[in-house]
Structure formats: structure tokens, C-alpha cells
Image (tube, rainbow, N blue to C red; front, side):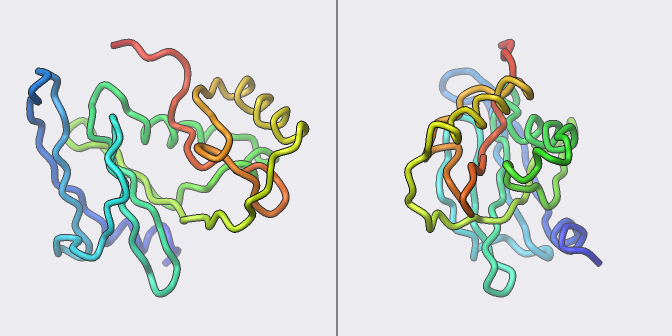
Length: 168
């Protein structure tokens, strides 16, 4: 069994929709690992559209991203982009190990946590490479040291769920 199948067989996200004080619907997801509530997960942030959790398999850290706003489906957009990437471009994007989601549950993805060990400044060619990828794949909202950074001597995009124009 590959790593993606191993994780997918163990991750389950229960959820329900709830109207917030702003009258917008939000997913209220509850992640489980092997049928048990994920107490060992570390929630690292809840931004305006998804929840992020770190978990480990052995010593390797992974990131679980769960959409919590049906209007902003970043995980679904990352899944679609990952499938559409040309082979030569995949090295510039953190890989999606596994994913799931349906009309009744929020989309979620798992990817490896990539340590930001190289606190290098991006060179002009790195910005040009990222800009070319943004144009080629219609990606929006990429900022250095936020959505991408230098890893193993090249740009690595770690958050690429904002694509095209959102209709709300």
C-alpha cells in the first residue's frame, strides 16, 4: 500500500454546515485518524477559508488542509491544479499525497510539511519562474515567504489554491 492509500484509509472528516454570525454557511469539520478523534493533531491556523493541522507518521510531518467555507474551495482548486500540472512543473509545487471531498463533506488534502531550512532570498529568476507558473496555471495570490519559498535551490509553491476569479 502506498503512502497516499495508507493515509486515506485512516483519515476521515465528519462535518456539518452551520450559519455563522455573518449569516454565511461554514463547514464545521472534525478530523479522525483510525476512527479516533485527532487529539494529536496540532491546529496551526484557521484562516478565512480552511483549517490546517500537522500530524506525524513516524518522524515525518504532514499537513492536513480542510476547507471550512463552501464559497472558497481552495483544497478542491489545489487538487484540480495538481492533476493538471505538466510533469516538468510538478517540482515547483508541494505534492498532494491524498485528497477527498464530496457535496456532503468539505474537500481536504494531505501534503508533506516542507521545512523552511533555507532562509535564502529569492533571485530575480526565481520571481520570473513563479510569475510564469502563475500565468500558465492561472494562480492568484502568491507571495514570497508566504505561499512559496526557496527549497533545494529552486522556488517551491506550498499554497496554490487561489485560482482565477471567484464568484460569490
